[in-house]
Image: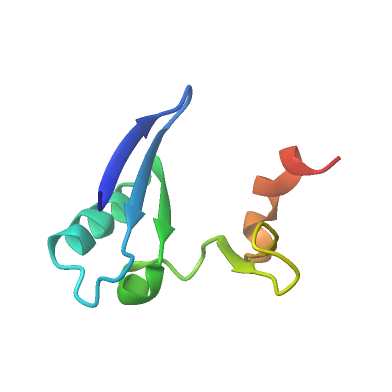
Length: 92
């Protein structure tokens, strides 16, 4: 699966997975159209080959396996200040 659409209650989710793709081809074109449209959320795995398509103003989530265990991960989230409102619902 390279691209899959999911329906959420208030918007669509476009999931793109570029794992092991050095040349994303037509899927990058679909991503470009999705980013320009702005009516849905794009979730992109292994985004290295499509960095040129992604907007500068975006939320970036990096998940890295830790040395301490097979099932443990370190998660870091970076975003411009103007998008910080997106995390408000996640804070406890």
